[in-house]
Image (cartoon, rainbow, N blue to C red; front, side):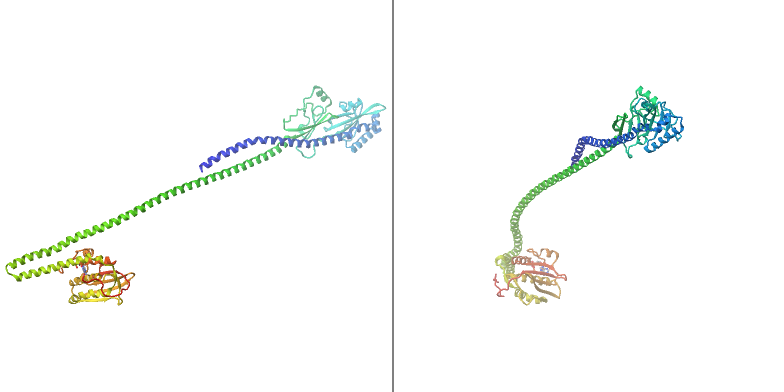
Length: 603
Ligand code: ADP
């Protein structure tokens, strides 16, 4: 994440830089807008100005020729010729008033050659011009010189600004008076409508005479010359004798001017530059805004692109990482596989080793058993041999002394001892004989009956009760006839041996069952049962607890060995209710052809 933000920041910086570079583009836009709006305003104002000038000139022209025409009126001439005649003056007054009413002029008045006002249209007003002298005004002087009198000025009596037209009144080519028409110009001081543009009208002195801004009125747009100053004082066109300069803020106005040659005036329209500036500002703002939006959009697109690139890069990195991991994992797995293969090989070798070791162990076990056995055999055989020797030596001595009866007794003892030795050797032969025959199908019940028959006499003598619980159908097992009988005989003999140590009642239980692939034969007695030590060691050769019956300790060892060879098992246990419980586990066999013993019994 950190690397992403650090790479994004310079993007924004470059965008800002770009924006700064693009800002100068706004300048031509501003210039363009300025030109456009200025031209627009100028053409608009030019029209206004033309209209205004036309209107003003129209007003003036309407009255320009009036004094000349009216000068010929007999009533006016009569008043001039006979000024003391009240009737003539009254007529003139009335006539002038009528004409003023009809023409819309502000005032008309008639002066004699001295400049005294004889008749006036406002004769009946309190500020009437009657009797007043205007000889100082140019409009009186000029007609006397044969010209049309023109003058702009503020009325000394009315304080109203007006334009004065004057013409000489003649009688027989002689000037007898001057007729003046004053046109009110106060109402021409405004432009049409409530516009932000201002009107500025200056006279030949450069003094503002008409303006839409009252505070500009009678201000000088340029310094007056001395001559102009003097003339001004003489003819009093303005209410002030020292016009203040007009100070327009430079650059604040867009000015358009028209000259009116016939009056020496200049008419100007002043449009506040603010109007243009505002529009230009709007345009520049819109332009700037558009630029900004464009920048932002561009920035956004660039950022998106950056994000996209980053993601692609990240994904590619992720893929590479994954591939790397897959490769590493594959290598790991291969390594593991190789290790496993090696381990399997090692295991196999170890197994072979083990089998070999086991074989060796078996061999060693056999040797060890052989050792133990040979020790025991030599011990077992040495005893009777020593006895036989001493009996034999004794017999010799007895025979020397003619004690034949005693010698016979010794020989009998010797015979018994050799019988015992033969029995030991016979047992050992049985022990060694085990592998000679392959197992065959043998019926269990007849074999058991045979074994029981051999012990029947002893059992009856001991009053042992036999409790049989065997199925009627023969139970076929894998065994050898003789070997099975030998095992059964041994076990039954052991049971009888155990029962001798117990008082009546003596019982022997025999039961069998078939479960899965095995036949189980249970031989139980109610004797003292196995001691703890016997349970552990009874199957070992030469282990015996019997002293009275001279046990050899080979019975169970031989049984175990025979059972193993038959693929069965011998289990030793004590019954919960007391006494020993021996279990013979034998493999089930297919029913055999005959129930007769097949093995060589004599063996
Ligand atoms: P031996 O009969 O010569 O002693 P065995 O190998 O037949 O040798 O028996 C070993 C020992 O197992 C016996 O000495 C005895 O202690 C014990 N034993 C065998 N059968 C029984 C039994 N039915 N009840 C109690 N103890 C038994």
